[in-house]
Image (cartoon, rainbow, N blue to C red; front, side):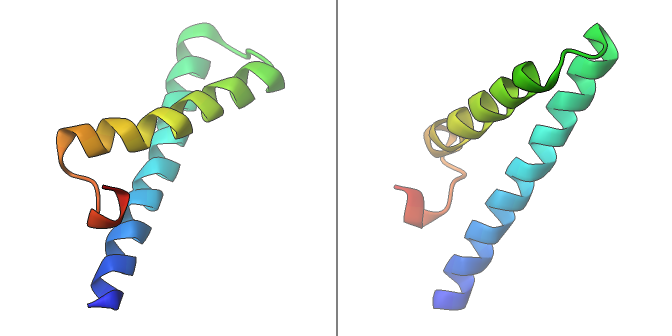
Length: 65
């Protein structure tokens, strides 16, 4: 039971990690090099927005409710 909960959390964090890299790749392709601080801001925004969005969509792990 605890293993299932940890697996779901780990999967969500893996998806978040991949999503951050995808967003950065799209930004780099569309705009070019934006610099470290802009990329850091993008990472922070994606990371902070991920959990509320996933929870609102109802696909987040039960530990996030």
